[in-house]
Length: 607
Image 1 (cartoon, one colour):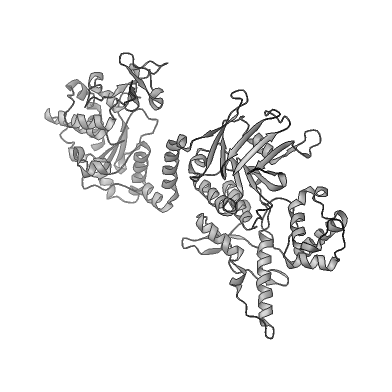
Image 2 (tube, one colour):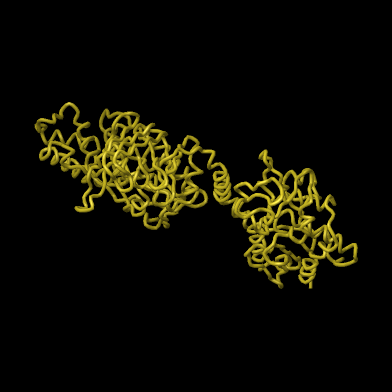
């Protein structure tokens, strides 16, 4: 799909004769605030607000889709704010069909089904003309009222405004239910044809429920609507479901009860049932529709637009500020970045998907973690069991290596003998465990947030379990964190930060020890680099983008230090910790003495 835009008049920050081209069946436009994303969407749509009158007028522009000109009648536009106030589903009846037939015939008699005379109902007018077929003649109005209305009613046509997102669920449910009713009535007549409801296709309530299941929504419609006295037997309502997927009938949900993000996606789901005619709609525009969507709803958003729009040949253009939307988009997505008029005369540049690769990894990792709720609950509720009466857990897999080596130093001096090496939780990667690196025996990853959560959960678990309170659990955090220590003496749960404040544990070693080379690589300290240029003050090496913000600061740099051949010269903290543990780096007594306060605090926890 190639969308070409040729603006024939000035519109806000876009000058007359502005031209651009967007290529792809799913296009994402990103950029800073004020870059003109929403303005471009309005240009594509072709109808804008007239400030003086408050009415909408056609914008003088030419937009082609695969070299075929399209106008606003072929385009739908939607923003997030348009979807958070979706109306409640209503109970439809035969009166809706009669009213639609009356409205369609009235427009036929008064305006000859001329869309120019009723621009808000172009789609309905176009549909009526198709239904009338050869009976329709734009130059006459001779179709008898009875025949006209019968055609409208028999096709279950609903006359409504041009908005594919408006509430039509009640009408769609009614139409399907009445077709079932009519089929059953015909089957009950003498020599009536056999009737199978499945011949009508999947019921709309079933289709929505299957879609909600796919999207992992916890709401469902009932699956047994019927016609009673010319109307649906009950108003379609969403219900909460239990863990087995069964409706909880005394827990109905009004649409207004849902979150804004859920409303937006459910609005899209409702839209999906309209079976949009591709000949009418060519392009669907979303202007920051994802403003309040969390990652799981972003994935739902893409599932719906792919299934019900893109797969039907309707192109989609999305403006967004959301990293989740950018990085969770399907592989076939085309990306464009927009810039302010003063920044670039071209305004729009196509972006390679690989530019978002790192962002994609982070978002997908986060989404996958929170999406599996059962697993996530178990993870957050997890506590670590140990055969030892004392368990000491460090933040990250490097610090326990340093602390154990320092403990060996003190044990050699016959100090802190009550602290055993076995008390320390030796965790790391699967490879660390398989290769028994530094005695690693537990496959785990405990960063700052995870350790803090684990300690909090341990306190909760010990509230009603006095036996667990007999075991001491201690968390040791780096001091360059704002995390609050957990300290519940009666429960045997403690934590503390290393000292002094605002340092990584590596700074307990001497600078010369930190800079020791291992196989030609070493750790660097930010103060070795010029703050402005990010170049090393003595060596011909430069910091990469990731590490450049540390230049001039007293921080450990263990990545992105490149020589003139773009070869990384930095040693990872993990490799440094392994070298300390394996005595490949000689650590002075003075440095080990810097660890004394850690063991003093551990002993305090014993008392």
